[in-house]
Length: 80
Length: 334
Image (cartoon, rainbow over all chains, first blue to last red; front, side, top):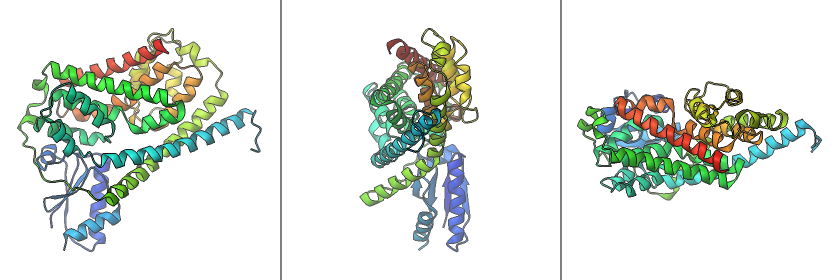
């Protein structure tokens, strides 16, 4: 499973990155979470809002920071 | 009330309690409503609506959509590139970029709660006019060449974004957003109302009127200028002391102060209210508030990534002139 957090480096984006790492850990998984801050890559992904959580090239969350519970639920759903 | 109403402390306390309750209710209600509404207007949809629009109609449409759009300055660059890539005219993109941060629902709520609907309406209408005019001017002069060249080379992707179609999900997200935003800004609002209450109780009447009154033609530009530099770091009473020196530069100064103050906009408005009651002219106060929301220094730094210095200067210049003009207009009219 490929987990990426896209953000241009703003505090909200860093928060989503940290929370995602935490959620992966709490789900008992061992995947690396990538933090992508390059604007060109963000745009190429088709994103207009940051931060965004992309799992296996599918945009799961865009423009908001969900709760840890919701993040865990999203990750678990994609890991099935 | 156990405290005598006629005591200065009692008056300040009542002012504090009534204002903080009123604002809390308004904030929760309006933020929830706006964030629910905006779940129907994700930028991906807005982009399609605005692509290949005629200028002017497009500018107005972009401005209107911008009002209900939340704006994190970290989204400015991807949004800008995504818009121009998909054929949204440059001027229309700018109308949206101005309106999204400038006409902000939190500021509108605070104005509504503290000053009444007329001032809130004036704030929204001025913001809309400035956003449309800025976009129309940039569109008319065909400044596409002043956008960084790499912007035109990026190929925007079209990955489908999560579509939260279920009503329950929209409500849940709006509720979560409202709660988080409220939690973040309400302490500042309370602090602002508290300071405002004490200015209300203790500052001498007409103190500011004598210092930054209508006769002071530079009050507006001074206010704008000041708005530009503080951004969350300067103490709130800085403005009062600066705008209160019999200084004709008070308006530009207020604007300058407002620019870096963005993160504390929520806490500033209650203070501005108290200052107005003490005689700060409304136009100066309005210019200050608009500078706080629209001329944000961090956002300018981020926009520099996609705009050549010439275009960034034009953008800042038009916005600054617009805000200062609005300030003078209302000092003159009211």
